[in-house]
Image (cartoon, rainbow, N blue to C red; front, side, top):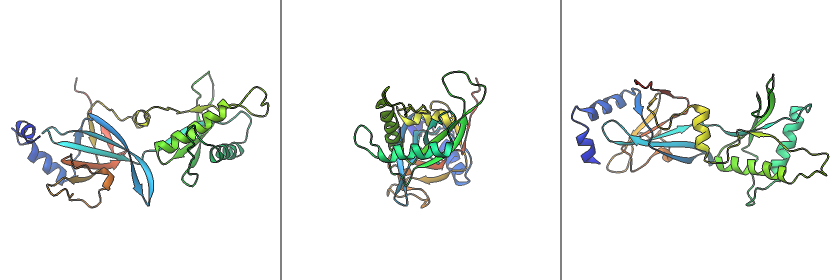
Length: 238
């Protein structure tokens, strides 16, 4: 790694970068690897997205995005009160289990009322949805699978039940949804702003005690920690 840095430092890029970091200047960054992770705040896990790459001088960096909302949506049935519908949904999730017996921690589950156009069909107006918000992608997966399991158990004889229509319901790696939702380019340059920064030292310590432990990596020379809203796109000069 030191050889790579030396080869890319002919014009003093390392000194320039170090000076920029001291004054908190915006830093250009292009992801080359992705990892989903949980950071713990007051013993509660919260989803964060970690992106790995190299700076222009070849030094490896890890960037941790926090403040990411983890959710899926359920459309409110026609002519049904949204508060009553929300209560019914919470009861289904609270009393259900996914295919592996997993349950949802209801003390950390939150809901929001939103309006959006359904993906299927044509509608002149937005429809109401209940947004199910969890702290981690695992809890989201369990809650979503409980809803899907509920749908699969409904038969034609259940005249008092109807299947629930979900949206934002990707079951694959959640980071893809995060990238779409927050418009994070996973293979283009982005500009990091208003970040917390720590530099790795030989002693495996960091020079910033504000940096959450989960944001640090002994394999990376630099660590950045910032809200998912504190970045901007870099225009492609081509």
